[in-house]
Length: 221
Image 1 (cartoon, helix red, strand yellow):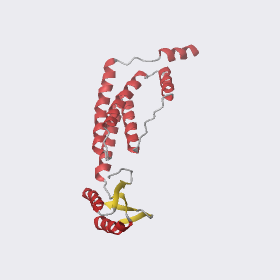
Image 2: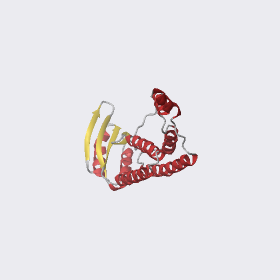
Image 3: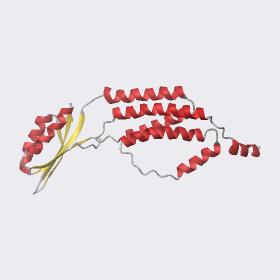
Image 4: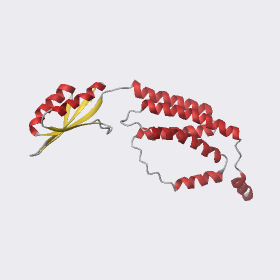
């Protein structure tokens, strides 16, 4: 019995036909293009990272290749777990949404390599539709923080300009010293053109700088 188990560990890897491997890679490539397109369309950050999007396609294909190699082999699967356990990934993922896309690419690669085409195709289609609906179908008011620093005499005019441009503004912080004053207001943007209104505050005499930061940490100025 023990010898049979050893033979299974050593010789238990069933060879995957080359045409089957090619078929799995083609399916994975087609689905990874869908992931690429959805990420590109739904991206809402400041700087679009094309290299990260390309890496999603590569990750899908690499996962398919790895799963084809270790298919039906306990020894190879254990060796792969050991190899990955010593790899340390130091690249920080700033947007939690990017982590979801990484898992999506990995899951797609695993599904394509296991011949579960109907499951992975339906899954990719469902996730794509949901991602697009959440990105374009559900829209609300964007909240930003406007940070203005300058001379104390200019703050009254700054406040008046903020309320005139955005109407709904809440004071979140205020710092006053002998040399400068700094105020932080929370505002709401109902349309994209409203974002440019804060630039007019820079022209007020006595204002040193104006900065606008969204709730997710993206800066506009």
